[in-house]
Amino acid sequence: MGAEVQELRFLLVPLMSQSHLLPFTDMAKRLAEHGVSVTVVMTRLNASRYKYVLDHARTSGLDIRFLTLPFPCKEVGLPEDCENIDSLPSSDLVTAFFDASSMLQGPLEKHIEAMEDKPSCIVTDICFPWTTDVALKFGLPRIVFHTISCFTLLCSHSITRSKVMERVKRDDEPFVVPGLPDKVEFTKAQLPQMMKDGPDDLEDLLDKFKFAELSADGVLVNSFEELEKNYVKGYQEVVKKLWCIGPLSLSPVVDSAKLVRGNKSSIDQNQYRVWLDSKDPNSVLYVCFGSLCHVSAPQLVELAAGLEASGCCFMWVIRKGDSTQELEEWLLKSGFEERTAGRGYIIREWAPQVMILSHQAVGGFLTHCGWNSTLEAVSAAVPMITWPMFAEQFYNEKLVVEVLQIGVSLGVQRPVEWVEEDKADAMVSREAVRHAIGRLMDEGEEGAERRRKAKELGEAARRAVEIDGSSYNNVTLMIHNIRQTLNHKRSKIRLTRNY
Ligand code: UDP
Image 1 (cartoon, helix red, strand yellow):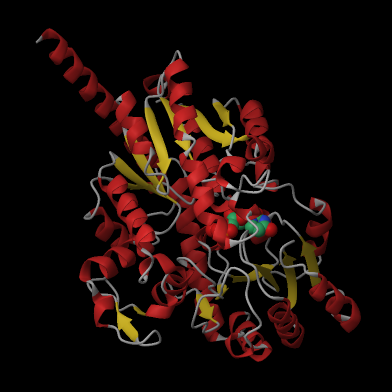
Image 2 (cartoon, rainbow, N blue to C red; image 1 turned 90 degrees about the vertical axis):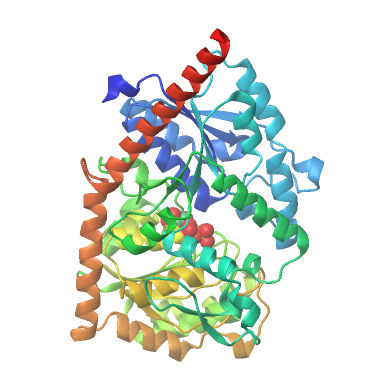
């Protein structure tokens, strides 16, 4: 297979955010393992954060390189060095961040012009409709990559196309998403901001995303067919070609690079491993809210109280953004860490999540339901407590709790703001946390059934990425398809010349 695809060169253009860069760089490895030469467009700071990908490629003989472009922070009014969504100080700057990203078009085109060996194909983030023009300019096939599930894609598509929201009067009124394989209900309040009545420029942007997707030569999704078969089929009917190639975090090759994903881990690997090794199988709850959520200190205090009251062992990741002085003071004053010593482990900053989830001591994951985290838990056969916060996380909760039945919901009713105010009535209570932990870690029939389903899906995930698994074969099919598209384009050019 290697010889057949050797001269293919893929150019990957990710959104500079952890939840996009991680699957994009995992995809780079997967493509390179299939013999494709891969260039990932980066900015200076992200390139240094993701240097481990290159180190790994070098030691594994994979043909991966970065094309580093300057990020125009100053030009759009972003603070200096704000090259990743996780370093934005406020949600008001998201639009500026997208403006800066679209300004990469000119420098990228210049680079392609100067390249002796032009790329054979662009794999672009759905958030970058401007890559359509780049692909057109150089006559390249263009593939759109989604870092969300087919369940989410089909729900959003059905909600938009059916205009069902026009009939919904109140924010808290549940409505059924029409035309789905299962009965799925949401309230308007739970939908991503983009799906609600947003400002016109946001609607324009959504239209551009949709056009860029429908006009692409194909669509890749970080998911696997066995996980959401009916939704994959449903979305396949919407777009021209769709290939599920995940879970991308689950490499069939033993991969030491997993120890450092996205950021340098803030703890010594051995330290956390020794702690987890000392615990019984399936006895630890891992708690982490991804790379972007800002949770208020009072809410985190409530979570801490719930963790303590549950009596369960836990490993809790507190992000820098969350680790406010207020929370640290409370942790210190209240004696929380002393009282939970031995059964509680706090990681301040960045944790090696994929490695933690795959440890046999971890039996549950309290998650904000980001798609990467959800898929990583599925891959590790770990059932979840779902605490969606924003974006498409409420969709992921539905998939996990109701469709796959491998989760317990905390019953959150509305998304949180970027920087959450103290709204006592909207907080998840310590009692709700304690109760959900009790249900998830339960040794009885309900818990056992959930763990059985999670185990089945974890095994299916592993099989999907192995040789001849569905995702492995989809990578091969997609590469074959690009080759055919290129041959077709070349023969058209030859015909035009002869004519
Ligand atoms: N992650 C990690 N360590 C952390 C926090 C997050 O490795 O301490 C990784 C996690 O494994 C996942 C990604 O960051 O791959 C977060 O993506 P997700 O889609 O779950 O959520 P988002 O960050 O977009 O909210």
